[in-house]
Image (cartoon, rainbow, N blue to C red):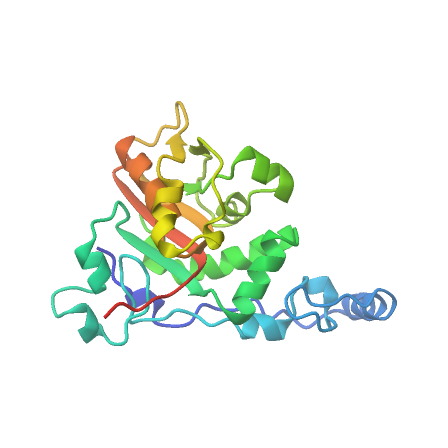
Length: 262
């Protein structure tokens, strides 16, 4: 089981660019005056539009998940004592077996981070994959050690065509790891956000399969997605990967809906 020791500090924010050159300042000024783009997250005018579609204030406002947190699901803990003397897992993870050995997320799915992810996912701001991937790698710490393959959570082809891209795949490409579309959707499912927590595991049951000749046997796999709510989607993916022979499965997301369990 991985510890959270390397995540004791908040993930760095992509908010400290080098001083702009004269040409850069001129470009920012011209774009700000003649195009006046707004921040994709908060809609305020961008002072440095050449640096990306999200303003520095919104990046700074991201609420990070920092220790103590459950080393299995990544949920925050009030104190390490809540996890018990012998375990750094939350009570829910100790009660419920999981195919995922350890999970991390950059921050809680609230406020600025939620707005940034909505711009990325639904506003087709694919350029945000880079800075979000930096935050993910920084938050992951030792979770990335020993990873053989990153596997993005797949979209059904209808949803991918509608959205224009798979956000999980875009994120997986930024992590500096070998990655592969080793999973496929076997059927279309309702959006997890539309369902109460009790129905989400049922919604994604048997919704994923390992692609033929995916080559995951014996590997340490990192599942990548943008948001974890109840963890049902990640768990469903992990189970089919383990059934296909994966030695270990971990998970990394940009955000998670954190729920403390007494």
